[in-house]
Length: 435
Image (cartoon, rainbow, N blue to C red; front, side):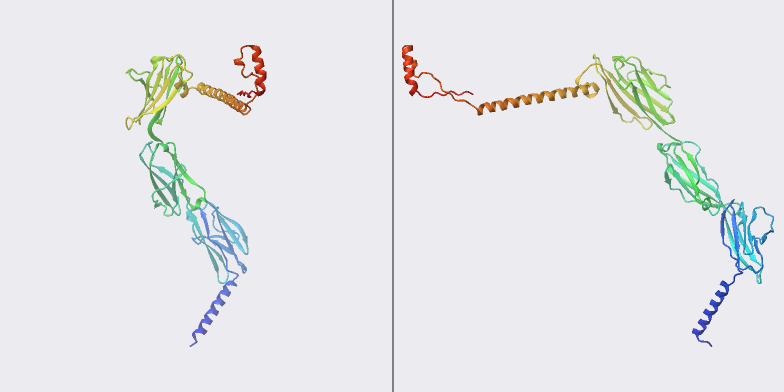
């Protein structure tokens, strides 16, 4: 019995010799596996280093000969010869169908016969997805549930959802085998709450599959959402004056758009306008037009009430009116109210001009500039007077008078002169200050 070490060496030597013989078998043909989508074209190549004066042959999974060298063996116009040489036999199959899937054999009839297998995988292309579950417009706050389905994929495709530009998380896909036993039908469901912002937004279902080669195959469904109306009143002109025509327009938004409009004035039970016109016209504004006007817009989703307060004062002139808006609480779940206050007058009052008039703004700016200039001038004059007074105080004067001392007691003029001459020399110096 041989030692274990020697036995191991013999086995390794046999394996090396066998692999060397295989690597040196230049008569062994070589092929490669191929993957093709339904309707595409697959190319099958078979090469051999040493044909040993034999021809190459391709046969299908049913062992039917397709080509023997350059000779066609099966009458199928989809199968064409691409290249035939002693070292290579290449054929193509166009308009591939699912039945073309399987192992194709390349053979060379040497002694012994050598073969090589090529597995052809045929991908089933999924059909365009279809969206179900949308028949009538959704109502605001409802839960929408949509279903997407795509058939004919092999292997099973993947479905994904998108609403507008945002991805939607759908439920786990359901996969069912088609009747042909080869392809699959994939179904996906998605559920989400509906808001009025979803009106006219598209929900898209996209199918992803390797047979599409990164091409997107999708279907979209545009949503229609019914929601409650909202309204505002727009005056034309925005700043009406007494004596002008005023048009009040009830601007509404909603789906469906309200088609019924009712104009009323508080204190009056008689409607002001037919119920199909959203515009109320007051041809000549006067004091009697003051009051609160109400527009009620109605659709199948409910009603909305918006109010407009018009106040015309009995004065003579006012450049422009003052407008302010006052929100009011909603009267109910299906009806909302908005107050709009419009104060219109025709007299000039400081408060009104300060609040609303463009002319008052420019006039105030002009007076401010004039006041600033006058203040600067007064300041300069005061500064000049202060400097002048300071200068005179610093430069006060001293001088001598020639008033005769003791002349008040002289009996006559001659005696006064004699006394003055004598007393001036010794008289005290008398000072007088000039300020």
